Length: 270
Image 1 (cartoon, rainbow, N blue to C red):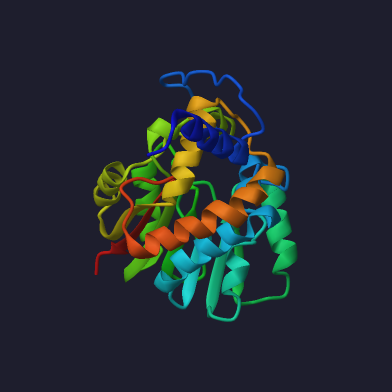
Image 2: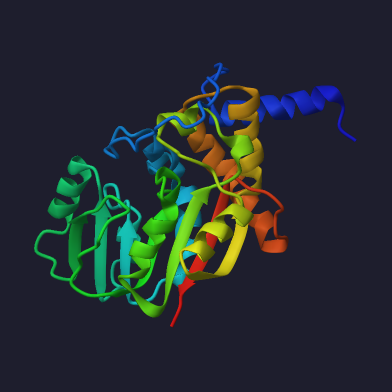
């Protein structure tokens, strides 16, 4: 059994891994409008998946890749780092963002490649692409959208019958803090609330589970107990090298009851 001193040490370590120091987080304002910020190089969320978090990016890719077919629409592509991992295995790729800087960078990145289409997309919206895709991927996007049900319906309209919409969202409102407000998160999901949203959109959830169990615990200590509002990139790198591999090892053996993220694969009805 751990002593109180040991528990305090573990809590402090987790806090230090994710936050740059205790800061008091302001309480959420009911009904407050939040807007997704620009997703350029300086965006806060990029610090969770940039070069200092390579293991985490690999974790994302290896979780999502088995459900991706031959054509894909990625919603909220940012600078295109996630979708570039699928190079060579797709016949048709659509990358999108609603930030002008990111759309411009995506156009530069894919200039001259006829197999890649770049669109400016802010959901909900009528989506215009050259052809339907068999897979839609949303990595940390749905939580920014108030009308999440309509957003999924819009995506289903450009997905082949029987195709998949892969959703990766932050989990559990107990973890909602100042960071979520800063990056424009409307909510954090549980498997139950995400299932409700998916079903209301007319989709069939095939995979639905919390993941990144240890990350959820670390995030709770950092944001809810410690009040951290910004993940220090240097310490994220330490977290990436230690906690992420351990989390992946645990999740190969057991299904966690809780996690920093909720992962869903939803099927478009035939």
